[in-house]
Image (cartoon, rainbow, N blue to C red; front, side):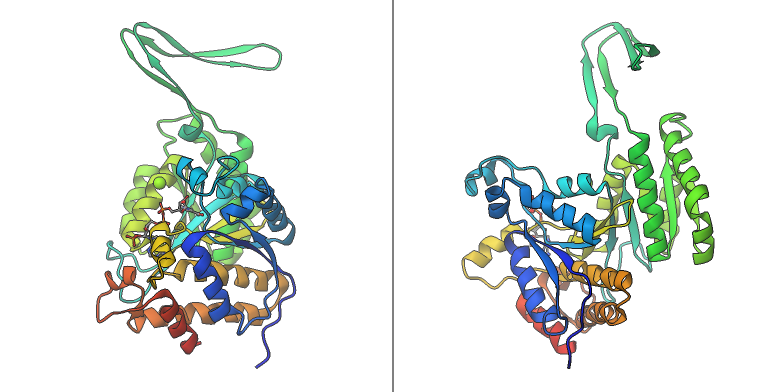
Length: 397
Ligand code: NAP
Ligand code: MG
């Protein structure tokens, strides 16, 4: 059988530890036998990031912006312990943070559902995708601990030196103050990425905030979303048969729990942080959560939501066969290949992505899986090593 051809290369961002091992197995066992794979390869493994003074991370993000579609392996975000372990020149920044800043994108996280592993919320039939605004608010705050009585003010000085002031509080005793901000530019990028992704997925988009209480701050988010929708997406949404709707966050939470899923939920930074952990857990397993970074200008970077699974890697280094779940990383590849196929008009590449996903899910539904899933599976489950699991998928392919 002739291998499936690709027109434009995928940007391939290799990574660290156990996921780097899985990465190679996925390519060898599940992709290279079928696809004449073309990639622009960037080694984001920590050693190579250090050797290149992290230039490789910036280069890979530029390649993603240029070529349009990237697939990324999980990478180590260095801390003090890693600096010592790898003898690093510096405590390099998180590659995901660097790539997200350069692509100015929003991260969408979607759980992979499999028959035999039910979400905690029984009426959830389809995945719920969370879009978290990843800039500003409490994550870029300024805080003061107020020692005693005094006046706290909010003051903005424009370029001409004119001041706008609001009293925050006349403190009668000790307390705390916090200053947060966001920018119209960042909220606009967030809105465009969300509307784009909803059209891609042909799913409704919900956005929720607390505009009834925060009449200027949260209201600005609501207004920008409404303006962007009216100006740029309304007609496309109507043609696609999907809707955009805004609702207060309290109302949204109640509706999400009652829903059957199958929509995108856009959230401000803190809400998205908290709700994505809740949804991931309620849907099953971190190892079944996919993630895609969508730039407002239409570029995509696909990855698994989990990390490099360090604990399993140390066992692997001792010669043990581990049962690390490769599903989210397989789906990062299929997501990227399908998007590449859509952009290039290569239908067999899209069809291949569909087949690989189906073979993966059928293998699990058929009772063969890694240990993390076997613990959740309702039925007879055979626990396989990562390699055996991928061989079982390949056999189905
Ligand atoms: P992690 O790699 O996600 O692993 C945490 C634990 O979750 C694992 O020890 C394992 O539990 C379970 N797990 C996660 N993925 C799994 C999979 N595919 N199959 C089976 N079990 C899985 O998080 P971490 O240990 O906090 O972080 C490790 C490294 O990853 C850190 O250096 C961090 O900087 C990096 N990280 C990278 C990304 C990214 O690149 N996107 C994201 C998060 C973390 P058991 O050990 O109980 O089996
Ligand atoms: Mg969190």
